[in-house]
Image 1 (cartoon, rainbow, N blue to C red):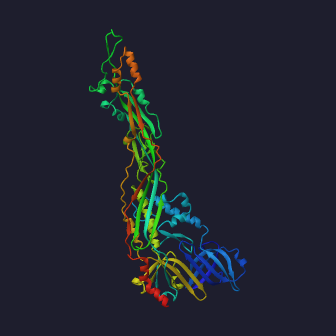
Image 2: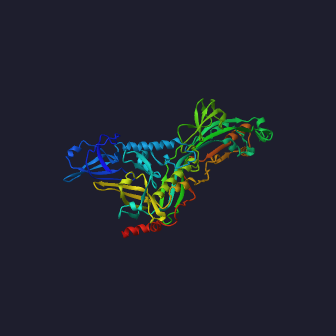
Amino acid sequence: MKIIFDWSAVFHEEKNNWRGDEEIIALEIFQKECGFAMAKVSIGAKNSNDLLNKKYAKIGIQRQGKVDLLFSGRLVAFPVGFSNSTMEIELIAEPDDYQMKLREFSGRNFNLYRSVNKHEKERGHILFDDLFFSSNDLKNPTIFLEGDNKIFYWNMKNGELSLSDINCGRKNFDVSGNEILQNSIRIRIAREPYGVVNLKLSASWIQQEYGIIDLMPIMAREFDRHLINSFTNIKSGIENIFSEKKGYKLAHCDIREMNSTDVGETHPVLSPNFYVQENESADRKKVLFKRFYFDGKLILHWAYKQKRVEVVNIKIINSSSPGGREKNVYLRLNAIQSPKKYQVWNHFTYYGYGDKIQRGEDVWKCKSPHVSDENFEMDKWDFEQKIPDAMTDETSSSFFVKTRGKNAIKYAMQKAIALINYSSRYIEIDFCVEAKKFMAATVDDQITIRDRRFKNGFIAGKIIRTTFSGNADHRIMKFTIGCCDSDQLRNFEKLNSYEIEIADDDSKINPADIVKNIEIKNKPEEQISILSSKAARNVSELQNELKKHPTKIKVSLHPLNTSRVITREITLPSLALNVGSDRGPGEIAKSCLLDVLESVHDE
């Protein structure tokens, strides 16, 4: 097995011709998870000026006449050290366009997320959820890559980026106990795993409710026999009782005086008898006044904005580590907004052919020009589509009750379980082997050590760190693997089966509550009493008395411009990850690895 070093014109040279440009005295290549591989190469001493025009290099392994690419990188330091016969240079497997690769990789996953229907129940893991990321976050792609249940891996041969799981690798390499070099194995507990993760997820949005209310029947209930009436013509007064306030607008006014036929026989159309007398010797004259009745519509359009906050609390229990640490995770979604692409359907509004409106979660296209009425006339519209947005209906009083909100909860739980999975990798093992058989193993893979001294005869772990050391006499691979005591992948199966049941919060404005108070001054009965007590000499005096005491209607409306925030706390059932042992990490490590530790100490 011969190591060959060549200078390259580009970062990753496709040509498979090898020249052996430099004589390698010693070589060390190492890589950690989520990082670029580094190479320290000792080559024969020469004039360092020869290296000034060099930028890229590749390192290969020649076996049976064939050379396999092992490392490709660019020069970062030269020379690092000199001796009489050697000098040391450093290379890094970081491509020049690695930032672009990060952005493209994030973009591909983001577009994959956008291409699925976010309102459908997720079958697998949710790889990306834009409610957890701002536009600034996406400018730094590592925030997205590190935030998932997987980490990322840079290929040391070509600089390509891919996802690498926390607990298990893409490929598995078996190592037998007798292949581990003597005195090289070291076993330690790297961290204390999480026993409980307390997850708190909050969402906030502006609830925008709107509707119409007809004041006429509400005012009529304040009159005898539920008909607005008076001995004065109050039609103009009714039209002007409402002055526009913030949140309210007069949408439609059609006040009509009712005729005797409309009123009916049960309602008097004349007043009781009143009498006038010009002087004591004159005869009393009977006077009757017309009673006016009114009906019609006095419709107000109301719009209400209210900030709402929902907080979901979930406890995720890792029963395989009952004595582990407790972790609090606080996540806040981006501000949830309704789409602004389409205007919201409104009452008493003209719509022309082809106009598009949003009504609830649906988009409609006008097929028949018309002025809208109190009710949405479906026969004048064609359904276009559902709106696949975070908050489809701006009148909603609950977000997490929706499928979109439940997906956000699942994604947050997935992030919490990823923390548990990572913390469960608390046993770390270092060991060295001869490189010939294990040169292909990277931090994207896993290793299973098969030895009778381990419980069940083996222990498996994800490769965390690799180091290749080579010189004229030896080729050594040093690995660090992180092991967990249970099948952490099954944790996500538990998540997929977790049912989220949330009662809907129907705390919307009741149109009946919009009217705070109705005050009627000088009702017809009061006018009768006033005229009856008046000693009038002629009809004009009675008429003037009515003018002084007209029927007035004052409507008080609840203010809609409140700044109060409605907060709702939701506590969901705990998710118990019943995977693996019910013993603490110290006990597991002791029982699992005691023999190996004792063997190492004996050696």
